[in-house]
Image (cartoon, rainbow, N blue to C red; front, side, top):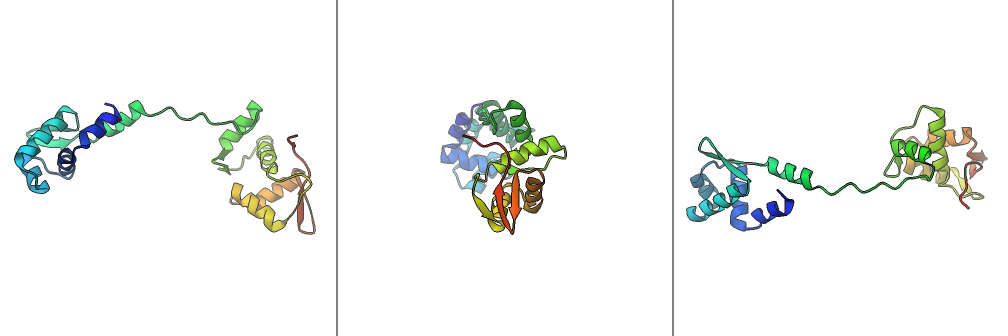
Length: 178
């Protein structure tokens, strides 16, 4: 069933109220009428429409909600996931970045030096070449990438991607887009 059809079934207040009563445990038309305050005739009409739409069913003389219909409708008619834009034009680097960077944050630091280098080069691009940064500014930028910003700063220096002197940092390595 399409999600629009489900919404259509529940768009009428009587049907929505009736369905809610069934979900909350009303198992007969008289129980639904008592819980909702709707006239019995309207409850019966709403239940018939909900049953023909697949939202309720009669099991052993009791009315039950078919809540799994919502999950099935979403699974069948979910939009295709948006194509994720690669973080690097190089396919091999993009594959590494896809694994370790999600929503602009590092999910975990790779143990392999080669993969870690790819991540660090990507992060180094956050710093403008020729600009000198105080340690506080470097920490703020790195904290946006990874909670352990001190380790990240140390990795960048150890890999020669950043340099420091007297608490001032600058980008000293990595690729620069021209």
